[in-house]
View 1: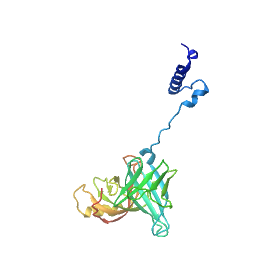
View 2: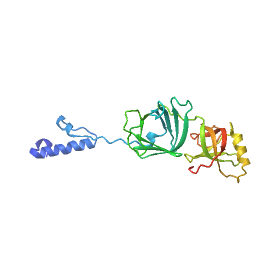
View 3: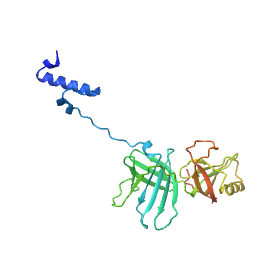
View 4: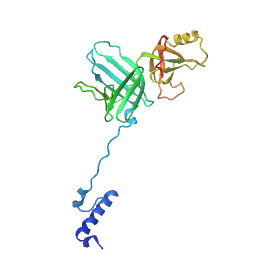
Length: 247
């Protein structure tokens, strides 16, 4: 029987089925009266790990005893982070630290040596500082870091603690906060570190925990390994260390 000959409730029911079928198939139902009956419910956006890293976020956060903390956090795809903080009016030298980040879809947690920082992640463009329990901070002051258009790699020279190992002309440094191992360039203050390592008379290939001032640099084309992974250049060997919280 043709649709035009259907009467009463049967006509309404058949037209509704036709409209639903047309919508499911990507087509448009004939007649304007039925178009408003097709409702599309948008999906809830999910912030993925790929949306968070690699990226860097910057802003000025509140400070208890200074005018503000200029803050930049760089998040890397290997789940490490670097955090740079400059205390306005107190020091022009930034403090740089690093560790591991975790993201559960709503909260970003920075876990470093003796310090944990939490941020709320809403969308892909901002991080909002939370208190230590992961709750919003009740304050009219700015607690938000905004994503940079291009990533800041945070390769500033800074103090680092880690386990140094030398074997077969392949020195490495396992950074304590992140637990990640980086190749070490044999330039800068490297010779002083190697000399101290040899003087300690450790078993070949043993790790030796030390404090150094160092900076990250792009991997040279002549060095094997993943090109996206930085290497470490020693600026100054500071001395041996014994930090039980090292990863």
